[in-house]
Amino acid sequence: MSLGAGRTLAQAKINLSLRVLGKEPDGFHSIETVFLRIALGDDVRVHIREKARTLRCGVMRDQPQEENLGYRAAALYSEETGWPHGFEIVIKKRIPIGGGLGGGSADAAAVLRILNTLAEKPLPSARLGELASSLGSDVPFLVGDFAMAIGWGRGEKLLQLSPLPSRDVHLFLPPFGIDTGEAYGLLDRVRGSKGTGKPDLTAEMFADWESAARHSVNDFEAVMRPRYPEIDTLLGRGDRYGLFYRMSGSGSTIFKIPGITARSIGTETPPPRLTIPKGTKRIITRTAESVVPVEVLD
Image: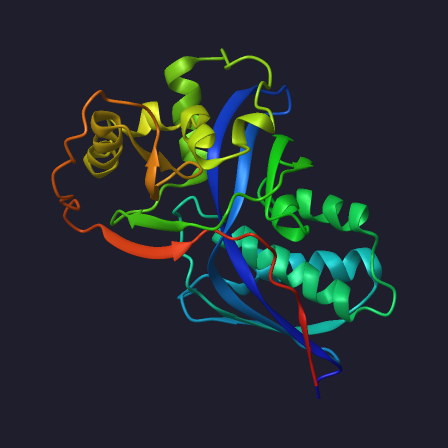
């Protein structure tokens, strides 16, 4: 018997900018990034049960449920609060796995938000953010109420930004994912212990789309482009024609914001028609201006 249930859309994110500032003594990396939610998301439902702890997700295959971030989020919430003692999580995946869109983190954040909405004594937002931080660098942003924010540290320090007006965003999904840990390891091997300095992103840089495009960077691109021709082809088109193409997170997804120029190329001749690299899929969605709320189910 269910003792209550809730659901929400676990919205994916893109990184309008991502700098890896350096590796800390504890082995984690300090980052500076600009998060922006998008309309693409996973459907997440949580039912409170008496004793059972289960998770159903069609793309898990042979992965133990205990390794899923959504399950880990529910278990952590239970350990920290003593409630709930049982749960059933159902996730309908739409966010590609290993694409730098924060799919697993979005699911974990959605589970925390649902449980906190259903709880008789919900945690303060600051405490919920602390739990989120222990699960991953994207989870603190995705568990909160910000549609867009600058993030520092491991992603747990957030400055809310006014969301940019919603626009179409094209997501290009190469036929492979990139493991986040391996991406950081590769970046460390290429540039050694040297980071990119101190945080320098400001709210003014991302106050409108044209300015955001001009100030957008991603430190992982330099090490991923030589390894993956699909990534290099798409980003090269942006470089060549001054278009707003960027990799999200540590990859492998490349996003494009149509109608926005990253720089002037001194000609009004339109670029040739895009040829999508072999095996790469395209999803067209929208950037978001708000966070989808939790719906309590009867």
